[in-house]
Length: 397
Ligand code: AMP
Image 1 (cartoon, rainbow, N blue to C red):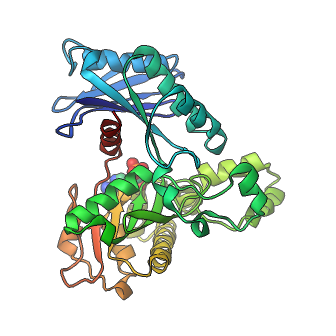
Image 2 (tube, protein in one colour):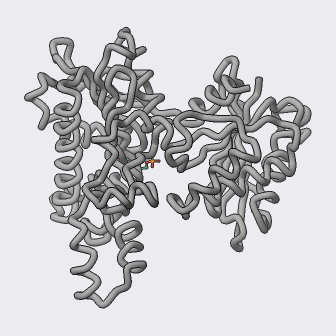
């Protein structure tokens, strides 16, 4: 059963075709600069070279059409025709309080996702365009919506409420939602499997450290807290997002720099994080690590501040769960940087953590990176959000 997984952004569309029985990747690719000059499709059937086609893509429907043409192409295609695609799974960023799990897409579901647009104005409209494009081109193929927020809907009220007038929650649903849920769910489940323990018996902290970054506390198989909030701006210091700040800074900087709220929000989202903290050196940890190692102040302060914030969240979530059995690292940085993992773990001796340096140096597989006598285990689990979306879609159809 082949499932097409679509992750649609405002000007991009990532896709993977996955055999949901064997869980093997059949082909993957990316459409970039949709609706902008210079758009291109990168398509890669598993085991073959990437094929890059520079071609105009006026909208997402054109992009989906090109993707489907590639998948069925007589030379480089991987299926004979579209009937070999059993279903499409869409990544949807915000499901608000309406969606605590994945769902098959109907007209009502499309409306309910549209109702959440206000909560994720950059993401949900793009996700909906992807749904509409697939519906137009594959009207009889079932589609599923898999939400970034759904896994976190088990958070208790004490974790999701802000210290704001309660009427804002009642009127506008202003509360903490959390994101990267598909990744936190996949990684925490996988950690239980790797440890040979029952998911429901464990207290797990997942650190999803990529360009966007979040931490979650998963107690007995349920998420009880996560670091992102109403939007993905809250929590850890990220590539370009500030993470937690004193909200009074917004007014302070607005006055000092004569900027509007919109301008400040753009700075908090696009010019802050490790990029801003490093005086625009880079948002990429590879560059920052290089700067750190060559003794550059920008690299040192940025990585130390980032790591300190992760350590604080781990401490907070250990307290929230009254203990922790396993801490998992995942996503671009979490999976690929032994250096940052070591810096974080070196501050966690109080949890009985001793890093196994040889294990920590490995890459690309599920790993336990603590010594056998460590009372809390630390794992590296490569995330696979597309596979998780394919699994959910398969289960729904
Ligand atoms: P993601 O958003 O999960 O794709 O993660 C992207 C980020 O991971 C990049 O911006 C880098 O900061 C980080 N990253 C990827 N590979 C490495 C690596 N080998 N060493 C350190 N950081 C890495």
